[in-house]
Image (cartoon, rainbow, N blue to C red; front, side, top):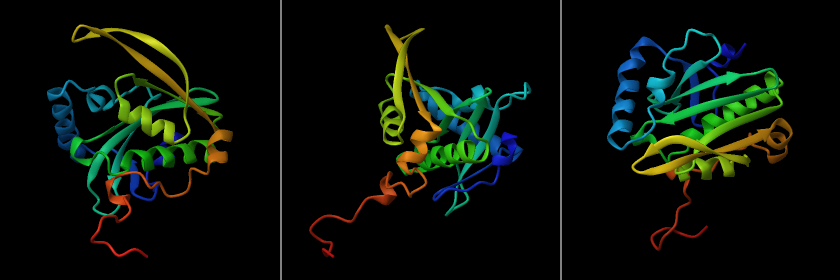
Length: 190
């Protein structure tokens, strides 16, 4: 059962169940997304009684602060997920660590064969992150929604359990502003 994922930790984050106390923070993330015309991740996946979607909070290990949320749904041999990180917590490596933790859990403990995600074509940050994590583009689907006079498209990306194991995704990610190497003229070269 995917609900066993709660409490699993990565290098930077812990995935846990969403509690009623998280609701205010998640709504704040939604408000921030609507101001910039972004996708309302938490409103779309906050609760689903169908039993197929499972929703988790992403909590930073060092501060126990809620930084985002993650939902996952599955078929027989594959699964997919959606992830959202609050605007003030982006580019810190939380998304990459949460995705790597989820992939490791689903591939190694549950034996899924593949993970497929769809990403809006204009979301360059997410496309770049998934490329770094080993996902490969398998196609593009034209989105029927028109936003500001232009037609969007979805990029379909996929990674298999063999590709994930081959890339060694369990190693610590060096992505995010907190992992940048020291540089500049004021730092001693070692």
